[in-house]
Image 1 (tube, rainbow, N blue to C red):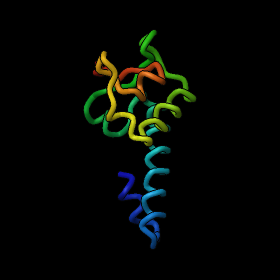
Image 2 (cartoon, rainbow, N blue to C red):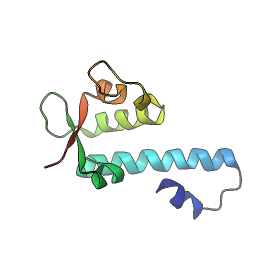
Image 3 (cartoon, one colour):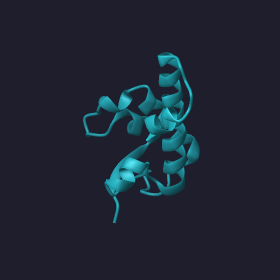
Image 4 (cartoon, rainbow, N blue to C red):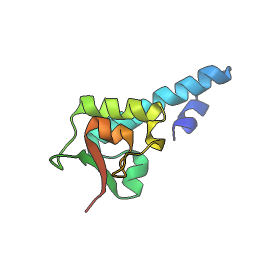
Amino acid sequence: MCDLVVSFINVKSLGARTSLNLVIFFAEVSVLTALQQASAGQKMLNLKVVDFTTGGLVPPLRIGMRTLLICLVLPAIFTKDGRGYHDHFANSIVVKSN
């Protein structure tokens, strides 16, 4: 989705295109997760992001931190309980929606 948005913007340099793609990804994932507890991809897979302790909503600042950690490629690293470090540090977890 982010690459599609970037393709409509006239960006000549590959570095600028990559950076813009990452900024749009950060904004899209943060906003959608804050509003509907899931990014577009998670929504399609019937998943949602919840607070690990309470199972409730994750506050917007923690969603922003979680998304920033995803942008830093921390989701590829998992803790011993199977959660990604981005979820561990944000005290969140991805669960199946009802």
